[in-house]
Amino acid sequence: MLPLPQHEPFRSLVRERTVAVGEMLEIQGTQGQMLGVVKVGLLKGLRSRPGDEGKPILLMGKGRLIGFTQPFGQAALLSLAAITPTRVCEIDVRAVRDLAMHHEPFQQAIYRTIAEFLGIMADWSRLLREDSYLTKVAAALQLIAAEAGSASFRIPSHTELANVLGARRETVARHIAILIDKGLFKKVDRWHGMLTTTDAAGPEARY
Image (cartoon, rainbow, N blue to C red):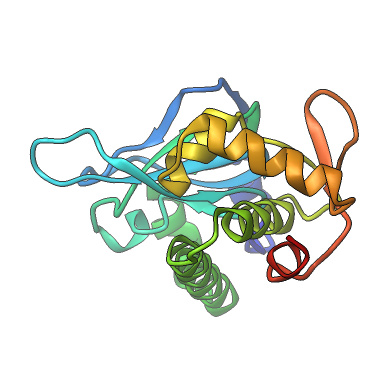
């Protein structure tokens, strides 16, 4: 969570809610009413242009801000949709402007999380320029693990992962199987997995 001003009126306005898979939390080009933080779960960020519904360009999870443009009166840069069961903490953006934005520590926390968001966007952009799908899939799983903040993380569907990588679902499934065969990734249960390497170049070097 962002550090909040030290007074109960602000804290009492924060609400946690469950977000269903497929639910939209933000729409590109619109001004929403809430500032939120992802507590648990994974979202896909879609960027659209006139005439299309948008294409996934990144995945983001725990600790990421939803609606970070709203306190500044700016429209959303991306559309955000939940791709796993998700929980978020939210507060009305008007309360943020009235009660929090004039606190320098709160401002600095917002600026820091925006900078971190730009970093993750750059990481996904770089990943998409890899030549090998084995490297792409391994690096994508590393980024997802980092978003979860845990060695064991919920794996998005092969379809969702394929969409953000610009691949076919079968391609993603095949390369995850290769990572498993090489001992670089293992399934914890039906929904969760764990990487055994932190070197995105490692899978290709071993292939």
